[in-house]
View 1 (tube, rainbow, N blue to C red):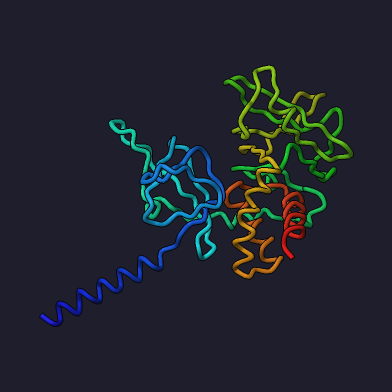
View 2: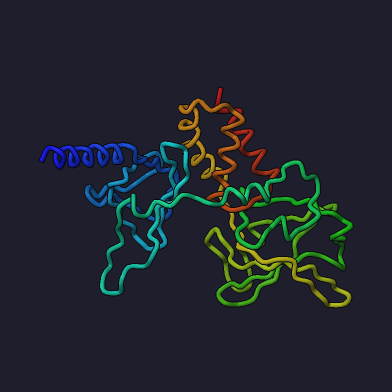
Length: 280
């Protein structure tokens, strides 16, 4: 009998320790509307979620981005659509918090010292590419991409299921990617921040031939929105006694985890400027 009692006590102690060891999650960004089911409180950046909290999403595509106590980066999102007979869009945090696995993307694509881009396929990739702000200027190798009025780069995509092609502007072999030019088309105006399935072609006017370079989802993130998101994260990292260089590295990794690849020089400049201004 004493042995059974000791075993039960040991199990309870282990279970209690396990619960204490479970991470809480600091909310850094929310897509859509997410509420704590018990209280009906809508989540906002800076809130803390516990593993045992049950959260409710307004749509299946809504999600929460968060940082755990051990500085892990997590997406809290429903993994499968609800059954047709139910409209329940809720789950316990511990069941749907998934750690990010895209750090290798930064390792492969973060090249802030690259003065010219010699391979646009590698630069854009074939998944998601995000531009900070409304535009970016990309210096490309004139030997690989001799851009002029006869040969130039074109973005091809669809708007309202209609094909759209946009010639990219250029200055001294710097190609210009501008949000306003891309979202305003004869087929309609794109109101969201993402343009899916953008194909990049090198087009030659004289021969009317084209060569596809790559295809990816193109996104834009507002600078002020990103500053606010990073300003939620920076105090957390400071409390962890991270130095400036480590904070900068963490923020860049975070961006690649949740926004995809980007222009390396832009993200480095953005993060350096923000951290140098805010961290003493």
